[in-house]
Length: 103
Image (cartoon, rainbow, N blue to C red; front, side):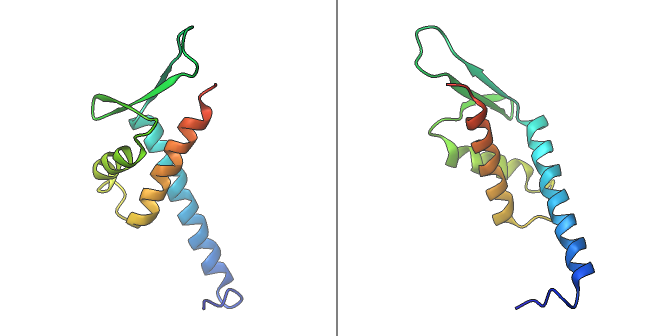
């Protein structure tokens, strides 16, 4: 178990660096993988598409595939972030994309 009382300053620096890296990763994904949503009058709910490597992919019901594609493309750009954290952050980004879409 880690004793927070002994190294509080070191722990605070680590938490700040980790949070800053995640925020930087989310900004990077927002710039590199733009999203568009299309809703026509006859549709019940809009469908969302994401540009990945100059191709359009549907976001709904395609999360696992998108996480693998994005992870493959950006894993070398963020070597300081562990793979599990990187994948979890990609999943959260896709969830945020899906929440923003109006019904």
